[in-house]
Amino acid sequence: MCGIVGYVGPGEAVDYLIGGLRRLEYRGYDSAGVATITSSGRLAMAKSVGRIDDLELRLAQTPTPGRIGIGHTRWATHGAPTLANAHPHLGGDGVVAVVHNGVIENFQSLRQRLENEGHAFTSATDTEAIAHLVAAELAKQPPTDDMAAVGHQPLITAVQSALFQLQGTFGLAILFRDYPDVLLAARRGSPLIVGVGVGEHFIASDTSPLAGRTDKIVFLADHELAVVTGRSLRVVHRDQGHVAHRVRVLDLQSTDVELGHHEHHMLKEIFEQPESVANAMRGRLDLDAATARLGGLNLSPGQLHSVERILMTACGTSWHAALVGEYLIESLARIPVDVDYASELRYRNPPLDRNTLLFAITQSGETADTLAALREIKRKGHPTLAICNVVGSTIANEADGGVYLHAGPEVGVASTKAFTSQCVVMSLLALYFGRLHHLSFDAGMRIIGQLQELPDKVGEALQTNDQVYQIAQKYARCTNFLYLGRQFNFPTALEGALKLKEISYIHAEGYPAAEMKHGPIALVDETTPSVFVTPHCHVYDKVMANMQEIKARGGPVIAVVGRGDTEAAELADDVIEIPSVDDYLQPIISIIPLQLLAYHIAVARGCDVDKPRNLAKSVTVE
Ligand code: G6P
Image 1 (tube, rainbow, N blue to C red):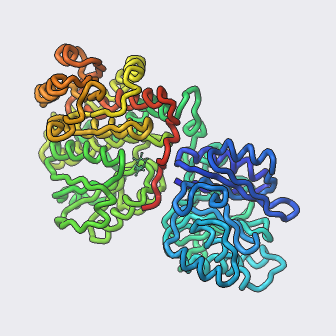
Image 2: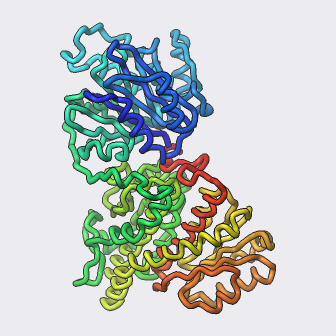
Image 3: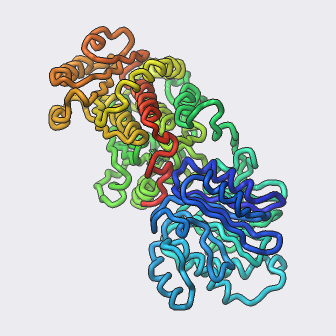
């Protein structure tokens, strides 16, 4: 969703702002804008509806020079994607410019009051109320000739007074026309970071704009306000006043967020999976004890041993990984697992046993519903763990402990490598909890052996790419798809269908293969392909019977099968062979051709794979 950048230093601000906004494109947006303060003290601004390319065209006509500036990509919530609604928004008569992520719940009443006081609004956004509010509070401050000499205190006081009146969530960067040496950045519920350079500072809503600029990062916490000049950074907490800030050094490679020779981020990330799968288990396999070594759980051995029930919560693709986790942990560790959509869990009041452990599964670590569900369960006194990709993200920080995926930045909106890494982490957890309870040393070693082979097997599965491309051309014009699988491959079927929906806009339903008889079979005709996910597994024969049922009704069948499966080959119209692994690791392999299928179909239909319509990478609103 929306993205924020800001710059103050000796360089041309707009260079970082535009480069940074490009790096944030993946989050999903429909308009964009930048504002700077020129050397003559003028506020220069450019906005566009549509892509950053359009913004650059506007900047060619109306440049925004200056050594300080802010920028934004907007994903419309309050008001349509129009120029008037694009950020930055101005307050007062243009003394303040604001970019904002999040939602202000009381903006209507604030707007009413500010309009009564004479502030003229020009947009339908909640953000504009913040800009006018800050301007109104600033006007109450005593005039100051040398703002730096007084530690920018009037600006801090004005912004804090304004923030105090806001209900809702925000990440904010604020520019003051009359004080061109300082930026203020604040957060409550919406991530914001400051990058520390040499004589310059960068602001961003996630780390991707900073790659190649600096690796020194300060993560702002809720209720913190950063006062940023080229040479200084101070952090002020709402209740505690000035607080020390920790500068973390992150390994940010600019190549991680750039396309290289690939046509799309999604394809690049699909092909990164042999490495990302290896990274998810690197250093975590304990061959001496035949278990997994998970250093970040932060729970005592006693606490872990006494876990009697696991609750998993997530959204989207991460929810499918949670389902894989349910099958894995229940079958290897014999601990009951419930999986709940975070958006449901946050408002539900399920009875929870005392020894229930919560896992929040999230690539971004910022999904609003997952965060709210985590807080709700934490409030009730249960230990919480995050399975998360983005280091330092809100959910990673708020959970009691967790496991990072180490998948590297995922830029494509449709999640791919995060899913397989999540499944790897689920198998490590199942192994770990299994070894605490019922799993023998030998069984643990067998699982470790299979895990070690996974990166190569993922590589082999990727070799189906050319064949999947051909299949995609054959079916690209279909308008309905069914995805069917059972047991461990039921979540794979759901995830395969989601991938197709997300990027090709084709209606696709994932179903347990046998359950298909209770409704979806009515959709089957010669124009509705069924994608069967049926590698050799303990329910293989049953799934083959389901395949017969589809064929008997004239439905085309694409089958993802184990190597050398002649039975499926005879029945199916198209067959994709993948390497064999034990049932519980199959989702990590069987999802690969389904990711490729969705990708090639979307390209064949001319869809914008990395920026699918209406979707956002990181959903930070409810
Ligand atoms: C959005 C993304 C999905 C993602 C979901 C959950 O809908 O488009 O790809 O699976 O959010 O995101 P998370 O970061 O919590 O895994």
